[in-house]
Length: 242
Image 1 (tube, one colour):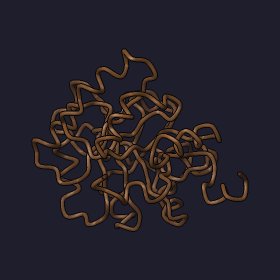
Image 2 (cartoon, one colour; image 1 turned 180 degrees about the vertical axis):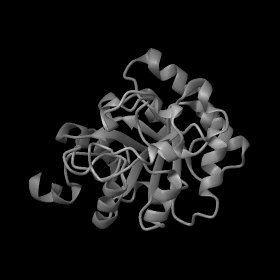
Image 3 (cartoon, rainbow, N blue to C red; image 1 turned 90 degrees about the horizontal axis):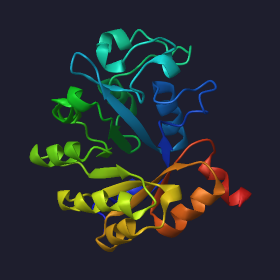
Image 4 (cartoon, rainbow, N blue to C red; image 1 turned 30 degrees about the horizontal axis):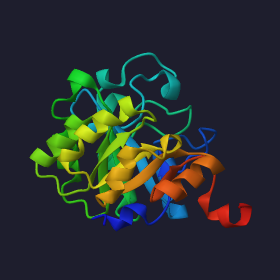
């Protein structure tokens, strides 16, 4: 069975427990505080700032979230810390700042975003930042090179593949990555079931889904996976609604 049972013990708030970017925006300290208060695990994204610091931010560019032009990775962590997210008081936090806020109170599921040639040193920097952190943390990425690098660096945290695909030509590359030795897989809920996930579960690999927003995705998670990464609703109310 899974070596990280805590990963599937409670619903995972996608980019923190935001309110669909109305007042509480994704991947902000406010969204993470709200998740902690609700008792949800936190999923978040990392980009690699120009000064070699992991920052919590999803997009490759700054337009959607900060309303300015430019590549996220062309800015230093200090420059990003000056930018308002969604016009709110929240700024772009570093991974270190997020860890200080969470302080082990809920589990973290952290995704490294693929920056192509800008990724040299990214995985090592993340592990350095996590050194000494005593809370539960899992690391994942669509980019399997990161996962192999984590193994090579002796990462003791659970690692997982983020993936999607509902056809055979999309499953085959995923099968080729199983030799890395995943602890879990985060898969697109609407692309379940499929043979790749069936094989992973036979091997005792935990499966979480993304991004669950409606009843159909919740049902697919219940039938074919172990836990959901959700947004746009409160899972604590599901017993009353369904």
